[in-house]
Length: 166
Image 1 (tube, rainbow, N blue to C red):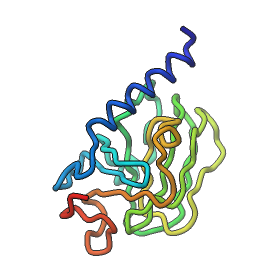
Image 2: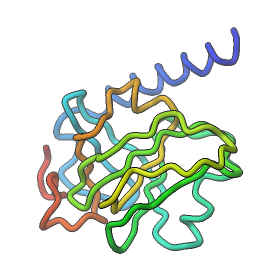
Image 3: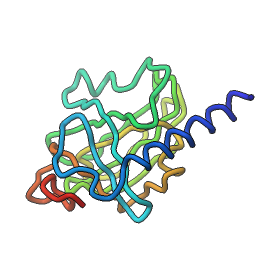
Image 4: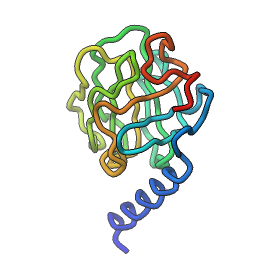
């Protein structure tokens, strides 16, 4: 089996398993090490690493050779802005979800290519960026307007606060 076909099969299998686990009402509490996404496409839960300081944000997912379909990295900032990313020293393709302070996916950049130095931005008003395995957002249907739930959001303005199951 060609490596691209094997990768596609792995992504499909992982996404299917993720969707089986992530049903509506996936959790009633938030945890810093997980985040929930929902939209017209369904719902999903990701195990995440949080990059919330300059050192962890600059390293990001560089030098990693794999990322499971159920994992990601959440970059958080103190204030909304226009963060820009590049793929220097990143060995795997990634999808980047740019998220507003309310927890709404504002922009999805699909399949950022390894080693590409082109800046990737999701526009103004971005408080968080979620990086997941490349191609997963499109395959699952994650798109602008999808909602994120995580305790790093200000729960008083979050469209999907931690105290709501769905």
